[in-house]
Length: 460
Length: 77
Image (cartoon, chains in turn yellow, green):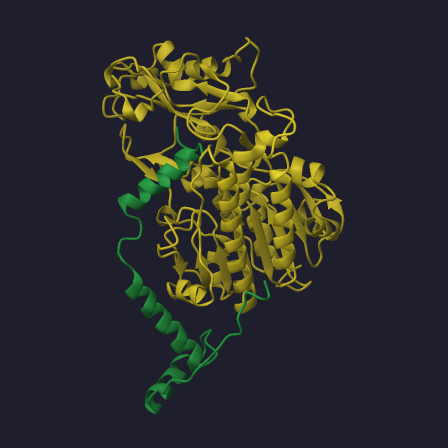
């Protein structure tokens, strides 16, 4: 298997439990691909978040090497300056950079982060970070004009909200269908060697509708009107993937991959509020209602640590000489950090039950730690409990989310399916997200850089 | 899907012959297979640049909109 064309279909957040098991029999196109090739769980990176995970997948580098620890990062160790990851901060070579430099033609559609659009040897459509369909979202810029000439408009993402689920569902379908139409157009009208595409709609579906279909979710109600919403969307994806497969030949290597999986959220744990209670984080006043730390006055001279929430948490230590008002002495830093780590690991559930908390120091995880690594990275109860950053709740434990949807959290296991020339048929074998980039290069007939791991075909 | 897709329609424009020849030379060894495809490419680039409202690709306003979306999705805080 070398020197052929490669099509990568990214289904953001696709879960092995649903795709391989629960919806087995509902997804004929994906299942025939599995029968033709190899499939399994795809273990993602830490953190299991869209950014950096897709870039990890397509560079073969870890988040520390990329200097990407999530969507947002601190501006030069300040307390309030934040930048959101976008394509301009990325210099690591992707598989399409490597392929393009060898003269291979590439189409890249909506692979995060790809806004602002950047040059490739071919065509690129920006990812969901594109502000809206009026933004310049293509490379070359004229591709947008061409798509419009052909009646194709682009909706990069939906505005998420918890009320009006009907409307949200409709918007997710419209967005996804529009992106698949663009993909189909490019598959037909471009000569390409590598085609990489990510559909974000499944992630939005999971976050918005998981609780309606998972009897294990604490907010599940049998017979609710959205019980079939997730299954229907998987069927829709299967049909559109089938449409893409009709547009490629049997000599093309096809990969279906996800950047992380999903599972039910058990609740949210207010990590900053916990830091306040423990005396590590000092506020100028008591908030009366749940409030983001960004909107509160923090007494930095009395603060030793604070956190950012999300699907995982980043804890920052207020280190003297590094932070603007640092208080933890450099000589005490390691002891303080390790002690805090043990305390977070020991956080219990609302009924005093043990939680499977995981706390890492970034240098333990990565080959190097570029950019702005946090001091600790925290996953509560193996990701089931979402760490909330807001302060001012009556309890440390929330059964619903503080800011976002309260349905699904991320999971370590995503999926992959690979079929094509030389790929053994019908095998099931688990793999790692770090194996995707070398697999793509091998299938294209290109040399794999020494820093990458072994490809999927070399695992058996 | 098939019904939605219109047949590609083309029409002719006139280029001065020396310009045509110059373009023909220029695209040799590139991905462009004809003078027409090159001219179409260039015109779309020109049109897209004219349509651009702003030169800065990721303004502060853009970033705030993206942040709002990420917050609503539960990625921030």
